[in-house]
Length: 213
Ligand code: GLN
Image (cartoon, rainbow, N blue to C red):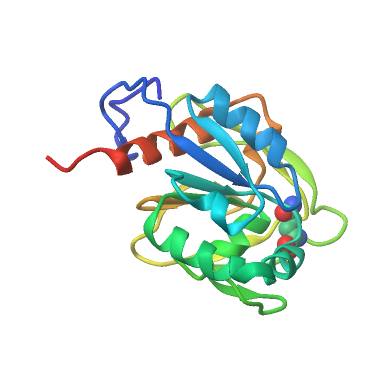
């Protein structure tokens, strides 16, 4: 982050750090390779995760976009859903688009199973068929000015609980939210050249590894 003094975003790690945390990207479907590239640029070591054992020893995890129903089908194998559940209950996780749907406590249109760790309510495919994919530039509380946001059949976060910080909005609805070590975006930051969102997550991961003082 280039502006540690920014007011409303609690800087996850005030110390500049060269530490490269190991962050997994769930690689069952979707644009995991773009996430891995963005993570490496943002100072992490990225590894692709295709089976439960590959979660071992990771400092954090990205759940990418794709189709959340398809993710759930893949996760039925080898008790992957249960391993993932344990991981996101303890470690930093960042869900984008379908990944955001997987992290949400409440999912509608239609209702479906989720990991239910973030206190947010999400409607799937909420932006309508014609206009559901778009590239927009919007304000964000992340330092560094407006952010490009790529939406692909995006869900809409319709409400957030009190422990959730809204870091960006589109048409009055949250599109980037943080709850402690958990981060979710309804857009695809890995498809833009701006790596601020990945950097922000890498710093959350670094801070969560830091020994308590
Ligand atoms: N519409 C998808 C879903 O409901 C999410 C789309 C995306 O991840 N780009 O899972």
